[in-house]
Image (spheres, rainbow, N blue to C red):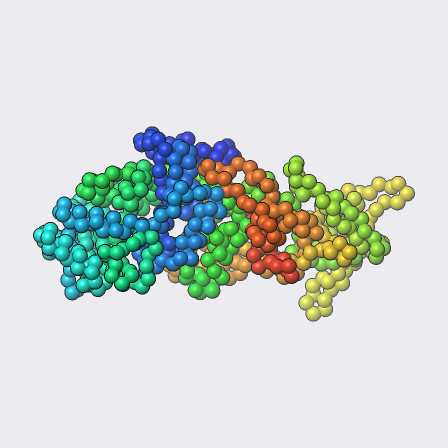
Length: 601
C-alpha cells in the first residue's frame, strides 16, 4: 500500500496511474468503463465507504466512463427511506454525481424471469419443507466446522416440479424459512461460495420496494420472495452493462459464483476484482456496533462528531476534499492493513492548514484588566486571516479589558513557563507591546482565578521595550463593536481507550472513554467570525481535490444554512467549525482536530 506523502496526495490521479487499479485497467482496458457503488440502504455510510465511493466513481471518471449509484435493496426488513436519502447526500457531498441512480428492485421482474430460466437450465431447484431450512442448510454445508457436505434431498427434483414450487413460493404458499430456491453448483469445490447458494427466499415484509411494477409477482402490493445478494448482484451488474465490478476483499471468494451464475445463464459477464477495505484503529465502523453505542448513550446519534460515519465527519467539519486527499494518500492494494486514526487526522490538518482562516478563540476565559489604560481606550489591531496570501486581513479592538485562556496564566512564574504570570510579561498576538501581570483575584470557594490585573508596557520617552519570550491569543471586551462573541465549544477525545476496541475480551463497549466530549459553555471568539460566516466556505475554490471528484462546497446564502462550511483555525487551540445547533441567539462550535497530534492518543 502506498504511503501517505505530499507527492502522492498532490496528484489527484495517483491511485489510477499506478498499483492495483492500473493493473485492473490493463487487464480490462474497456473504453468508457461503467462502474457502480452498490450500498445496502440499511444504515449510514462511514469513512470506509468513502474509499469505495472514490474508487468506483474515480476509476470510471479517470478513464472517461460513468458510475451508477445502485441501492442493494434485496433485504427489505432492514431498509429505510432515510438511509436512501442519507447515502445519496453523502455521495453528492464528496463531490460525485452518479450517471444514474438505480436499485436492485428495479430489476426484480427481470431477475425473477432469469431465476425461472436458470431452473430450466438445471442450474437451480426449489427446496420446501415444514422444518427450519436454515438449520438443515448449515448441516449440508458441513456445519461450518469442515464436516462432510451432502446434497439437499430436492437437489435433483424434476425441472417442472421445481418451477411449480418456485411459483408457489412467489404466490404465497410458503411462509418465511419454509422454502428456498437454491443454486445447483459444486459441493465438491473447496470454495464455500459454490456450495449451492440460496438464490431466493420468502420474506414477509409490509410495503413496497419502489421502482418495480410487480404486476405478475405481487398480489397484494408487495413481494413475497426476494433474491439474495449472491443471485442479484452479478446479474444486475450484467443488466446494467457494468465493465468493472470493484469489490472489497471479503468478496474475493464470491468471484467464482459471480462468474458461474452469469455463464450458466449465458449472459454478459462483467469483470469482478477486489481491493482491501479501509480499516481504522481506535474506532468501530460497523452499523450494528454504532447502533449499540447510540443505544447505550455513549454517543448522541449517527452524526455524533466522535463517530466516523460520513454524516458525523461532515458535522465535525471535516471537508470532503480532506477525506478524498486521505484516501488518495493511502493507495489501493489487496494487502489488509489497519490505518491509525492519527494518520487520518494529520491528513485533515494538512488540508485545513492551507484552506481556512485564523481567528482567536478563548476556551476558558479569564478577564485581564489593564489598569494603565483608560476605560474608553480602543485601539484597532490589524490581524491577517492567514499566513497564506489571498486571505486578507481584518481588524479587532484592543481595549482596557481583554480575555486570555486560563491555561495561559499562573499565579507565580517559573523558569519553564513563558506565558502570563505575576510579575512576568507576555505578548498579545498582534498587539504592539506586551503586558505584565501585577496581581489577581480568586474565588474563595473554588480557588479559581477570576480576574488578572496587568499593565500595558508601552514605552515612554522613546525608550525601547524588551521583546517577550511568548505570545498568547486574546479577545477584547468592546460593547460598541459587539466584541467578543460568546460561544459554546465542543472538543472531542478518542471515543475508545484502546487502539483495537473489537479485540477487548469484555467487548468494545467496555473500553469506551468516559469523557470523550468536553463542553466549554463560556468560550469567547473574536468578531472576525462574523465575516467568516458571511463568506464561507473558505477558500471559494478548494485546492487539489483528488480522485477526480470536485468536492466543491457551495457557499451558504444564510448564515447557518451550511454551518460545517464555516471553518477556522484557533491559534494554539485547534481547527473549528460552526455546528448546526447554532442560531442567531448562540454560537456552537465543534473542534475538527487539534493543531498537532496529542501524544496521549
